[in-house]
Amino acid sequence: MAKEKKQLSKSLRTFFGVGDFGFNLMSNVETYYFNFFLTNVAAFSVGVAGIISSIASLTDACLSWVYGAILNSAKPKKWGRYRSWLVMLPWIVPILYAFQFLKIGDGLLSAVIITVAAVASHVCWNFPYVANVSMINVAASNPDDRIALSSIRAFWNNLGSVLFSYLGLPLATILGGIVGEKNQYAALAFVLGCVMVAGYFAHFKMLDGYEETDAVSTAKKAPAQKTSAGDMVKALFANPPLLALLVADLAKWMIKFVVAGTAMYYFTYVAQNVGMQATYILIANIAGIIGAYISKVIAQKLSTRNTTILTFFVMAAVMIVAYFLRANGMVVIILMSLSQLGYGIAYACTPALYADAVVYSEWKTKKNATGFIMGLQNIPLKVAVLTKAIIISACLAAANFSADIDPAQATEELKSGIGVAFMIVPAAALIVGALLLIVGFRITREDVTRFQKEIDSRKA
Image (cartoon, rainbow, N blue to C red; front, side, top):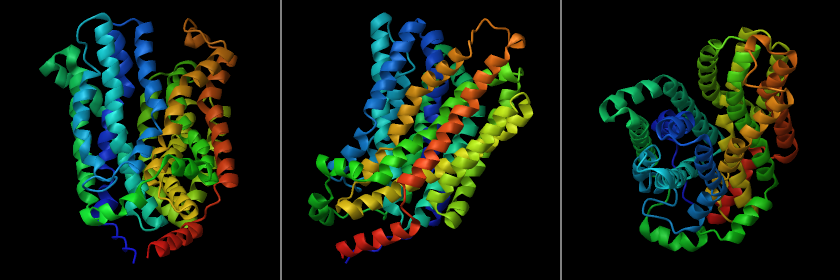
C-alpha cells in the first residue's frame, strides 16, 4: 500500500520559509550592491561592469531549467531526492559569494574571478532553492497544505525584504570597520550567506520524515523514481496548465522588477518628491508581508487558482487608477502599495499552482517530475530580470527622457511615459496573465484531489 503522508507539523506551518528569509537577505546584497561594487569599489569602467553583470545574468538565465531536471534525473541521495540538497551545497555558497565582491589583482584576472564566483555561487544556491520549493509538493498532502506552506514561505521571504532595507547598509558599514571598507560587501555577502545556510538547515530538520530516506526502499524505487529527458519534455509540453502558468507568472515578476526599477523615476519626475520613495518602499514591503500572510485564508475559500486570477485583475485595476491619479504622490503610494499587497498574495499562491501542475503531470504521464516542474519557476523570474531594463528603457525613450531634464521642468509627455512603465505595462501584463490562467489553467481544487487519489491508488 502507498504510505500515508505525514501531517504538516506546527513548526512547518509556522517556520517553513526561514530558509527563504535568509536567501532573500543574501541575494539582496547582489540586487542592491553588485553594480555599485563593480564601478565604485572594484573601479571597473561602466562597460566592463556591464559585461561582467550580463555574463553572470545570462548564464544564470540559461541554466535556470537545469537544476530541477538534474534533481529529478539524478540518483536520490542519503536524505532523499530533494531534502538532501538543503545541506549538500548551501555551505559552500557564502565562500563563493564573498569572492563575487572581492577584487583580487587587476584587469582581466580580477574580472574573471568575480564573474566565475558570480556564476558558481548562483549554481550552488539554485540547487537548494529548487529542492526547497519542491519540498512543498513532497510534504503537502492536499491543496490546503500546499497553500499553507507557500503562504508562510512567502511571509518569511517578504519579511527578509523589509529587514534588509534597514539592515543591509548599516551591517555593511559595521563589517567594513572590521575588514576594511573595500571588503565590506564581501563580508556582508558572507555573513548573510551564512544566515541562508542556517535557514536551509532548519528546513532540513523540519522536513525530516516527509520524504523517503530508507536505503533499501530508496534503492528499490530508484529506477521508477528516475525521470528521463523524454519524461521531462512530456511533463512540460503535455501539460497545458503548466505552459499557461509559466507565461502568466511573468506578470507577477514584472510587478517586482519593473515597478521597483521605475519607482525612482516616478518620485523624481512625476511626484517630484524623491523623499516619498522611502515611505513607499516601507509601506509596499509591509503590504507584501500582509498579502502573503492572508493568502492562505483567501485561497482556502476561493482556491489557489481563483485567488490568483482575482488578485491579478484587482491589481491591474488599482494600477490603472493610479496612472490616472499619478499627479498625487500620496494617493499613488497607497494604490501602488495595494498592488504590492496583491504581489504578496500572488507570490504565495504561484508555488502552490506549480505543485498542482506536478500532480496533473504525474496523473497524466505516470511519471513524477516534481523537481523539474517546480524548478521551472526560475524561468519567468530570470526572463523578467533580463527584460526589465528593455521595458523601462523603451518607455523612457518613447517619452523622450533625458537625464539632463530638470525634474521641475518635466513635460506631461515624460510624466505620462513614466506612468506607463510604472503602472500601465505591469497592469497589462497582469490582465494577460489572468486571462491565460482562466483559459489555460483549468485545474480545480477538486481535480487535484481526484488526481492525487488516483496516483495513490496506482502506488497501492
